[in-house]
Image (cartoon, rainbow, N blue to C red; front, top):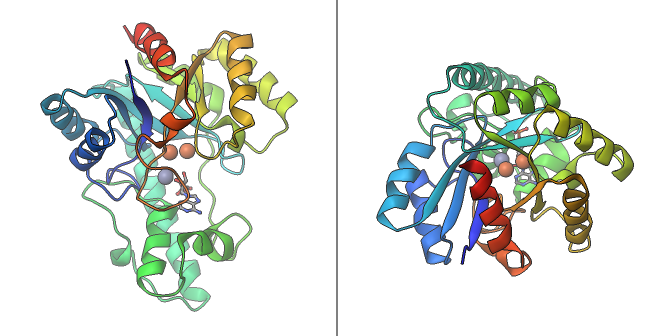
Length: 278
Ligand code: AMP
Ligand code: ZN
Ligand code: FE
Ligand code: FE
């Protein structure tokens, strides 16, 4: 019986736990199938895979690629290969873009009276930088009292220190993942800022580019959205996945294994995913 969590961040992107630590946490929480899915990076997978072997946890390599910016569109690539030249080139490019963007955000924060330097941003060696780490830096400086405040007042869309990401075409990223042997799954479809009719039409188009599934069981989805997105997956013949999107205990995401409470079809969905990966 699979108890899965297929969306987990580590210090290779904006999570606070190292790859080996998220595996230990998964073990503690009774998870036996997990995916490490850092933003635009696969550098955490090697360490996590080693640790998972020691604990009889099945680890799926994954990545979460940011495509649209305002629309919050993220594509998970399950079974991503660590030796893909094309993807490694893309991730190097994205890491540089994130570095430059973080510098611009820091400059803007300085301008509005919040002194901060790049050295204040917590990031592991080789880690890609994201706004969550900048929010943690603002928190540890005492400028804000919750991470949410950073996104609401300073670095969120429409705020004075907001800097957008380079946009990439979602269909192109899906096609690239597929071409490189990974299984593309649309992350948290409920977070895309578009109405349901448009979302469904887009998903059908993305399926024609290689989209294989949608992430139905995500903490940003309300309980009423689970049956809806599950229905969309069924209608379009797509796989169903789920995960906590764990970054750190107590933030707006969930903890490892927490989505199992509402993901009653987990075992069946996990088996279908594993079959598609072979
Ligand atoms: P970025 O990829 O740099 O644009 O940062 C966006 C990421 O920040 C999202 O994928 C979330 O992981 C994280 N995030 C967004 N809003 C919040 C929040 N209110 N609290 C904590 N993390 C957040
Ligand atoms: Zn994140
Ligand atoms: Fe995401
Ligand atoms: Fe995520």
